[in-house]
Every structure is written in structure tokens, then in C-alpha cells.
Image 1 (cartoon, helix red, strand yellow):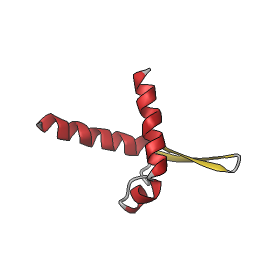
Image 2 (cartoon, one colour; image 1 turned 45 degrees about the vertical axis):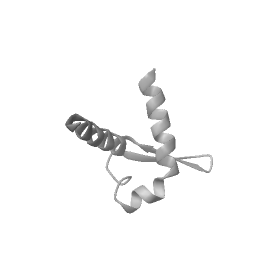
Image 3 (cartoon, rainbow, N blue to C red; image 1 turned 180 degrees about the vertical axis):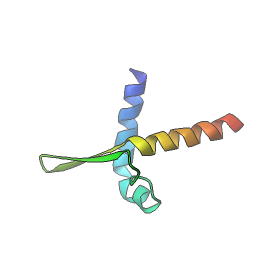
Length: 63
């Protein structure tokens, strides 16, 4: 249940900073999906969130 909450919060954060992330290359990875429903666009960043979590885990292992 906790991981579902973390994924939901990460999706909301990614949707908020989507423009900035696309400028640095995130959000265009093969596992990132954009879903259009009822005139709205939902961004689901699976690959980007995995990449950032592995990066955070790698940084955290040094400290």
C-alpha cells in the first residue's frame, strides 16, 4: 500500500514538472506513457521514475 502511495505522489510531481524534465531528457524514455482521456492528458513516467529511484539508491548507498 505504501508503494502505491509513493507512485501516486511521484506521478503527481512528474506531471507538475513535466516541461522541465523534458528539457533535460527525462520523460522521453521508452517506458514513459502519455494517456489522453476526455480532453485531459495524463503523464505516467514509469521508466523515468525507475531511473531516478536507482540514481537515488546509488547516491544513498555512498552515505
